[in-house]
Image 1: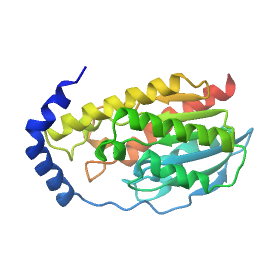
Image 2 (image 1 turned 60 degrees about the horizontal axis):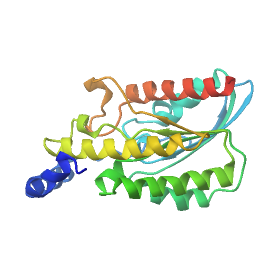
Image 3 (image 1 turned 30 degrees about the horizontal axis):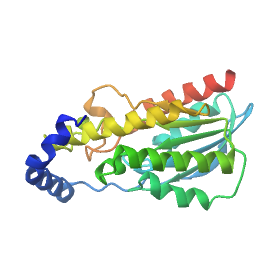
Image 4 (image 1 turned 90 degrees about the vertical axis):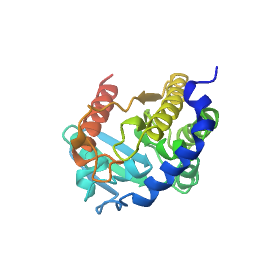
Length: 237
């Protein structure tokens, strides 16, 4: 069954195209934060961690990695474990773009992989079917090369809540993001090593970075706490 937003895309196309161009033209371009992208922190049982994905994984919206996803997550985990970690992330990556970057990494044993992808798949007009196919290829590669105990697949963000996006563009992108997230959830449910973690944050303007598109440091902290809780729960299971 074709959804309402898909039906309305054609009559709305001129407006959506204009809004998209305007958003890109007026967008505040934030850099990826400074700071280490690999390291070791904490003490206790060993935990080998890979964080991979797009600009949100890279920490855009924070000035330094310590205030981004990698910094908050490794600090939280380091209170309980001896964490050896690495970050492979880049602004603009779609799911398929991450695959060759993962192939360049040496084979190694990992305990946990955190994936943050999806927004660029939405804006790049990926269908849910293509997104699921690319995600399946990525998950298979991660398991074949690293044999992780847990892959945390972060949900596709609710793009209708991005302050930088006007209506109806926000609504159309939000509906497509929800379809991709549903496909990701279904795929994760078919693999016992994969856990889908929906991207649900409170509706609070302080959770958006100054560009209105990326998470703020406060949002990264909340996100990291949710991820750490799942990782520690899985480790104790």
